[in-house]
Image (tube, rainbow over all chains, first blue to last red):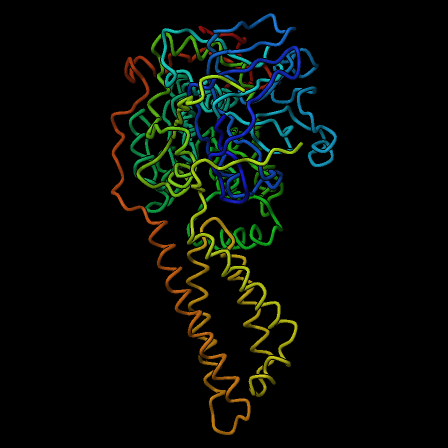
Length: 397
Length: 183
C-alpha cells in the first residue's frame, strides 16, 4: 500500500510499504477513505519530538471502512464506517474506566521507555513516534487499529467524511480545551493560535456560551476564519496583545485562556523568543512556550489556563511566580477523544457545528509530502489539509 | 526481515535547496569548530598576525549560522552566512599585503570564500523565494462552521459540564452547579 513515511527531519515521502495485518484478536484493519495532516504532525516533521525512526508511517487523523476484524473483536464488523481516535485505549484499565483514555495504561507498547522519559507514560497513539508506542500512522491506504473493539467511533452514512473526520482529533481537542475552562456566561475566553485546534476551540467556547471569544494569531486568513465564528481578533504582528485584551475586559484580563499553539510559538524578535530559538537549536530546551508565558501574564487572577497545544519536553522562563500568585488553574493533557465524541457527533448531526469549515485543501495521498511543506509554510492560505487515498491497489497483499 | 520502503513518487518534502542549506549548515559547523579549536594554525597558514581572538569569534559565528541552517526555516541563517562571508573576505584581504609570505594561501582562501559567498547568496535567495507567502491571504469570513448560524450556536451547549474536577468556584463561593447538561 501507499503511505506517508518519515525519513528524517522535514523529509516525508509517499512510499510503498507492506499492508498492515491483524496482529491481535482485538484489532481491525480499515481501508482509509480520508486522513488529515495535523498541526502536531509538524512537530514530528521538524524533529522537535526526536523519537521518530526512518520508515515510520505518520498520521493520526484517519477514518475509513472496516475491511478485516480480529477474532476477539465483537464490536466491529466488516463494512462498518469508523473514525479512529488518535489515542489508542483499552477501555478497561484504571485510567480508561475514569474516562482518561489518553492515559490508558495498556496501549503504549513502549511503556518502559516512555515511563523513563515522562515519569509515567500516556496511552499509545497512531504515527507519533516511539514515545507513544511506535504504531504506524493513518496517512496511508490502510491502517491497523489496535484495541479496535474500543478504539473507534462508529459514524453514520448520512454525514460526509469531511463532517466526521475531525472527530479523530481536532474537534474533541478544541472541545476538551474549552470544556476544561468551565466556561460561564460572563467569561471572556482568549484563544492563542488560530490553527485547526484553535478554530475548534473558538467554536467550542461559543457553543459553551462564553460572553466573548478573542482569537490571537498573525495570519489574516486564520483570523478571518476565527472572525467568521463570531470571535474578536487580535493580530499580534500589528497590535499589542496584552493591551488589547485589557481593553476588551475592562482592564481585568480574560477569565479563561487557551493555548492552541504549543511548542513552536512565534513572537517576533522579542529577546525571549531569540533565546528560545537559540536554546532549541542547541537542544537545551525542546519548546518555545511564548503563548503559555503570555497567557499566564494576561489571565485574570483565579482564572483557568487550558493547554491543548503540544509541548514536547522542557521549557525555560515560565513565570511560575506569576502563575502561583495569581492563583491560576492549569489544565492540559492529550485529548480523551472518546469521552467527548458521542456528544460531538450528536451536535454535528443536529447541525450545531459542521467541522468541515476548516478544510482549505483536499489532495490525493501522494501529494502529502508537498502538502506538508505548504502547511508548514502557511502558503496558499493553508489551514487544514485532507488527503484522499485513491486505492489504486484495490486488494490488500 | 526489515522492509526497505520503495519511494513511488520520488518526491520528498525535502527539496534540492533544502539539502543545499543543510550542506552549508554542516560546513559552517565544521569550519566554526576548526576556527575555535585551531585559530593559531589557521592564522599562521594564512599569514595573518594577531587574529586568534577574531578567528575564535568567527568560529562561534559560524557555529551559530550552522545550527540555524539546520532548523525548519534555514533562510535567515544562510543570509547570516552571507554577512559572515563579508567579514571573512575583509579579514582575508589583510593577507594580500606584499609583506605576507603566505600571500598565495591567503589569495586561495579569498577565492574559496568568494565562491562560497556566491553559493550562499544563491541558496539564500532560493530559500527566501521558497518560503515566501506568494498569494494574498484568502478571506475565510464565510466559514463560520455553524450551519444554523451564530445565534443558534451561541450557548447551545451552555449547560454542558465536564467532570466535577474541572469545575471552578462560582460567584458567592457556593459549590459548583451540578454536573450534566442539555447534551
